[in-house]
Length: 228
Length: 409
Image 1 (cartoon, chains in turn orange, blue):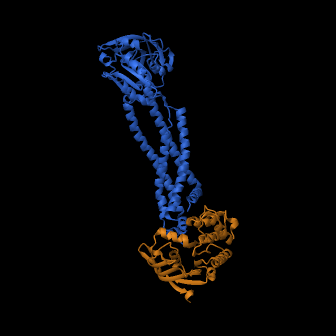
Image 2: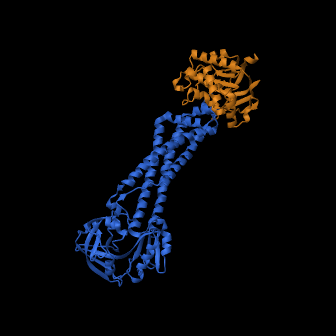
Image 3: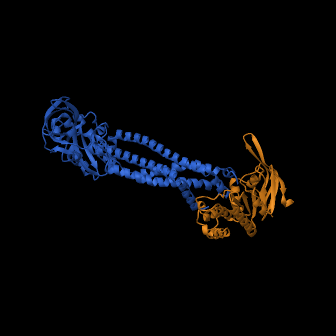
């Protein structure tokens, strides 16, 4: 079943009088449970594609469907609702809220979705346990290493049980060992939960984990291993 | 998202830059403390001046002949009360009345060998509680008795200025009902200092019977001054004592110019209060804006996680509210301490400053008065204006596009 469908999507950025076509008539479908990488040089459009998939932005033309809904017609609050329920995010800079503990960071999306406190607690501890940080739950991000912060970020992304997790360069700020650990963890969680993972990456380590590789060049899909 | 968690995040966010939060909070506290202190001082000064005027000059109610004009200090028979005893009896029968006493006023000139000065001659019943301030302010000599003849009381500062003292003789001249001057030699029986130089230096006192004889007023009086248990009963008492040929004036009528000056002054003070509140509010708004700019990426993260715009806005308003509320509590404490000092100790402004306020009975000590209603009002205005001004940075944070805020997903 398709989680995301991009149909003939174009995204243009204007900086002054200069227009840049970040995506040019791209069509792509992501199935449930996929573990895919978006690969390409800088400026190829992979980050833009991730932003459109994550409802953080809307295309100039074309359609983006998530769970069958055309999100290009949604207003800002509706897109926020969808992000909260369906999509998890992992950023390259971890993006934890610095004043919240590891536990509270993972709990945050569940508070936004109104999950009752008992269920919240169970889910948060389950996820922290799955990423090996149950004993660091009360530490704040400035008390954690980069690898630990990224694991908390992974747990947070999965907390609302999303259908899809979007990760932008998730290993960029991790050393080799932590990067490998993070990818193995996400692979395991992908298999456990059935949540689709889409990575925008330069990192060959990440690409090596992906079951599907979509190569972008100049805002277009140059190669898609799903259709190879 | 529970409001409780937003409060927690807001509270902790303030701790990320403690110096900035501390300075902002201090500005709220000091701003409000200043307003409370100003309010206490203004209320204290105006209220005490009004009460002093009532106590020393006007009373709560005054009965006069309908044609009497105080500025002229007329001694014409038609301008004086000739049924003083009846009026006193009627007034003293009323339960609202604490006491009533007749007075006779005349314009006079006090002279020594070396100099002379214009002043008011006040004939009083020395036994009346109305004149307790003079009795208590006696600093030399003796107070008057009802039968005192050829004796006056004058202020210490006036006597010192004229180089005279207790036991010295002075010449006193007043205009009689025929418009001719009557002059007499009087001995200074006592010197007084009530603490109100503008009052003390413009009046000499003699017994009522002496004044009536000296001015040929017979048994007439210029007015009957009435003090009430509760000054709010003044209108009712005045209405009851009004009669043909007799005018009853309340303390509001008798202090009209002063009250109008008070109202005008209050408008000016409210403008000043508004300016102080606005300055403090702008400081808070600036603090919040700086926080928004510093946490732009964080706003993008929260938006990416699905936090709604109004929740982001509430987060920043909570930060403003915490700064405002804590600052207001500290400000109330500091301001109240200042007013308490004014109320209990006061600020000595000196004789020259007190004398410079013409037409108003002004003491040499500036006192304060704590008015809880005004403290609450100022605090609520401070809170309201701060939250209002904080809407812009909160709105700005909420309107940040997640993509732009994050720079990169």
